[in-house]
Length: 200
Length: 200
DNA sequence: CCAAAAAGTGACCTCTCGTTCACTATTATA
DNA sequence: TATAATAGTGAACGAGAGGTCACTTTTTGG
Image 1 (cartoon, protein in one colour):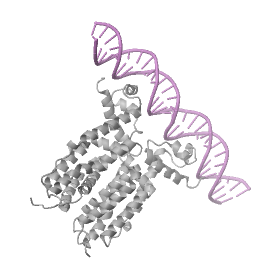
Image 2 (tube, chains in turn brown, cyan, yellow, purple):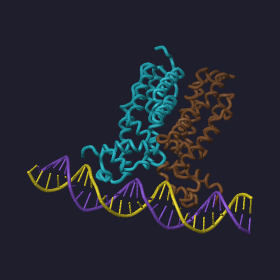
Image 3 (cartoon, chains in turn blue, purple, orange, yellow):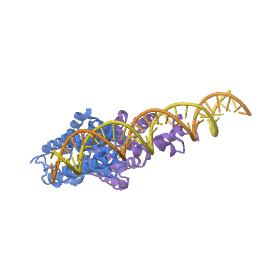
Image 4 (spheres, protein in one colour):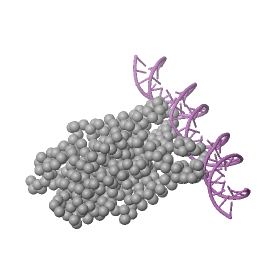
């Protein structure tokens, strides 16, 4: 049972930290739920805090490749309706991918006591989505799908409400369907308000 | 040193829970920072968890009188510029009032493990502001200050981005000025986009 | 002003925490 | 296959956690 134990510890740690926070998690339950004894963890990590730091390293690296690289930018939609579909696809992914959900939860919990968690939280909750959609909106404005405006401000106006509803899904998973419906309604509403020449 | 000790304990508990979370706070440092010895707390509360529950009671009650009652609804502005000023006044208050800031922090940390914190978090972060601004926007639409539309959707579109920036202030207080400026810019942008007959 | 209630103290209890360590079992390698 | 490194075990440790209790000090009210 040697292989991949380190990764399994990190995965389970993410789960438990997301549920009870770093301070509220003890290494006994962490290892026990992996079928190990508590001292085994110290063959892979020097301390509980090192688990936390390794987890943060992972989260930061994952964010960089998944959301931070330029080649992962979404394409500029050809129609307004395509923006809605693209949005729903991205949102559906981000609220159902367990790892990303848990990451957001951990960042919510730990953002006030860890500097790096704080920085990553700002990316996840605020700047990341806006930066991702700014070029999209710039392109849509060029195509006349949205009225000409500051694309960064438009992207912020679009993504911040969606982000708020994504966090509702994290907090109250039972209301996921409701939240997704509201995101779609908001997306259409946004297009109606910001819409340029609807005929193309 | 008897008077108000219970309140002082609750105030300090809010502070510490907001910094380190419930699990990350111990009653020794809680009482020590009040010039008491740890056993003194048990004259006022039966357990650490009872402190938590009393604190939540207080937060819920405070929210109800401060934001939940109908008579505290903001007035409908006479001009679009007045909406900006009203918004900045309210935001300025909510990011500088220590108690409210700490409450939001605690809710961020504890929302995933406590049912009542979860419910209050949704109010603070999502529905509260929207419900507060829905009648305001309905009134402004009637007056022709905003184009006729679903006032609830407009209020959500308006308050969610502002809420996101308020949370940035909680997370990174150094960026408060920047965030406030962005809120004001967003508010004016919103009015420009949603604006009805600007002449009155 | 004095008795009873409330508030505060300090020693102590038990439990659990993170961590260490000597030891065993497994795996990899030459 | 022998050997060395790696992974896992279980007992133990010290520190610190939340909580109790007998006792003293302070406050309150008739």
